[in-house]
Length: 76
Image 1: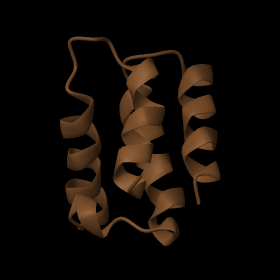
Image 2: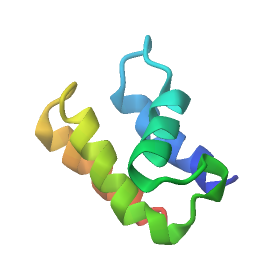
Image 3: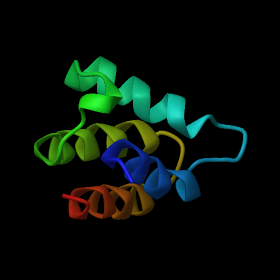
Image 4: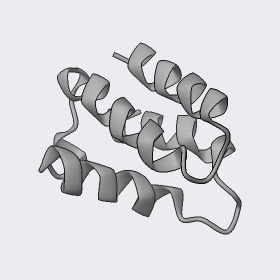
């Protein structure tokens, strides 16, 4: 499974069902890392995890956002 898909699988349980998880992660890659999702590598994970936790922290409790950040960082 490609790394981008692994990140999506980590994020999915934290977002409401109505949210497009793929689009959310894609937006984080393009906007904050300036990369295409397919170019995502283990070296990008700490920064991606940081931005995802910041963005998702607006929708869910900060403790859960931190847990998600840690889960994403462990993928590398």
